[in-house]
Image 1 (spheres, one colour):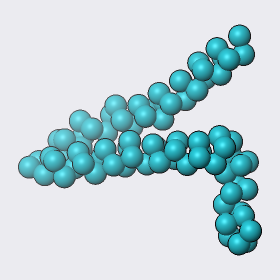
Image 2: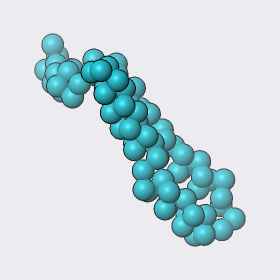
Image 3: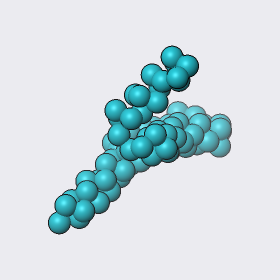
Length: 81
């Protein structure tokens, strides 16, 4: 049962990170404002909305999955340990 809860919470967290309210409201407004620069705007939007979240997810996973381990990794690299 605990594994099911972990999967459910993880899935909901990922969904909210990749498809939050900003990803629902901002694209139509962006499309309205950019005019003929649509492809440049959509590339920047995808890089910032999906790319940054994916990099954060990847870095958290690579550090061990918890914020404490990520902080230890960052602290150790600054101290040269």
